[in-house]
Every structure is written in structure tokens, then in C-alpha cells.
Amino acid sequence: MLGAVIIVPLVIFRAAFVGVVAVAVAVGTTEIIRAVRLTGVRVPAPPLVAGALAMPPAAYAAGTTGLVLTLAATIGAGIAVRLAGPADGLVRDIAGIGFVAGYGGFPAGFAALLTAPSDGSWRVTAFIATVVASDVGGYAAGVLSGGRHKMAPSVSPGKSWEGFAGSMIACMAMGAILVGWPLGAPAWQGVLFGLATAGAATIGDLGESLLKRDIGIKDMGNLLPGHGGIMDRLDSMLCTAPIAWLLLSAFLG
Image (cartoon, rainbow, N blue to C red; front, side, top):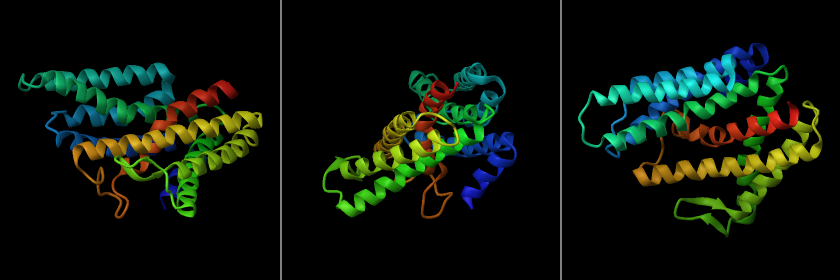
């Protein structure tokens, strides 16, 4: 069902896909805000959620300039609202505003940028499929090998070096196929894209695990029963989106 929500608008009307991304990251931003507030950091929800909702469409309509300007406006609006509150912890709260704006809506803007070229549907497909391949390959390799060599046991006990090797192999294969066939790039560029995706996706997953461990929560939300919140599903993709956009832009123009 979730796959259909993503794929159907991507194929039929790419602007609708950007809308799906915007709504998803806006919901995810509310989860980030709730988590950050558990640490005592005061971040205003309305400007940050509105900014997360606006950044993907701004990127789609006006490119990187629109994305950066919307990020700046979001942070500025968040600071303006926060200045109306108490003076204690102001610097800490401003840092929290920047973190929330940069963690959700900003990288989602790069997913929107991927859709802008004429072959944007295939670029997004390559991006999403390769991130999924990282998860599937890592899980399969970890289970089959027993995952004896842990990457970061204090942060994410399930992550192993064997699983990471599986992620890299799966991503290289998927990248070579999707970047090399429908997008027409050399296979070595697809392999490089896969390697970068495997690394970024793993960092995104570990980064959110570290954040949740520091805050003392198991999941970022409970919107998806059995899977946590939206951000628990988007962590790898959000971290990978800027790198995917940068590499595919360099390879394909």
C-alpha cells in the first residue's frame, strides 16, 4: 500500500509525488519535534512543520535556490517565534530549530530535485530502489551470516559488518542495473552510486538510532503499527537523498 502511494503519483504526475514527499516529511517533522522536546529543548512546531511542508515543492519549482531560501526562511521564522518566549536556553533552542529544519524538510527537498529532469521518474526509482536494496541486502546477509561482527553494538545491536557487506553488494547490483539501463549511464557509475547509497543509508540508520538512544525512546512515533513512525522509515532515505541527487546530476547532467 505504501509503495503504491509512492509509485503511482511518480509515474502519473511527478508534482503529486513531490506533494506526497512534502506531507510525509511534515508528519515526520512533528515526530522529530516531539522527540527533541523530550530533552527540554523548546522548538516551535508551526513554522518548522510549515517549512518542512514547503521545502520539497520549493525545490521542485525553483531548484536548489528555492530549497536553500525556504530552509533559511523556516529557521528564521522558528527563531522569531522562539524569541517571544523565555530567555533561558535560547542558544540551545535555536540550535534545536536548525537541527529540526535541516534533518527533515531540507534533505527531502533533494528527493524533489531528483524528479525535476525529464528522466526524473527513473532517477527517483533508482534512488528509492537502491536504498531498499541496502535494507534487504543487509538484513539477508546479517541473518545468513549470524551477524557476528557488530558495527556499533552500543548504538544499534542489529547492525553487523556482514550485513553492511550485503548492503554494499545489493546496492552495487541495483545501482548498476537502474543507473546503467534506463538512465543510460556507464555501469561503473551505477556501482559507484550503489556504494555511496549503501554508506549513506547505513549512516542515516545509525544516526537516528543514536538520536533515539540519547533521548531514551524506542521509536520516533507510532503512526505505523509495528514499524514506529514515519521517520523510522525515512531515516536512510533522507540521509541518502542529497548524495543521490549530487551523483546522478554529475553522471547524467
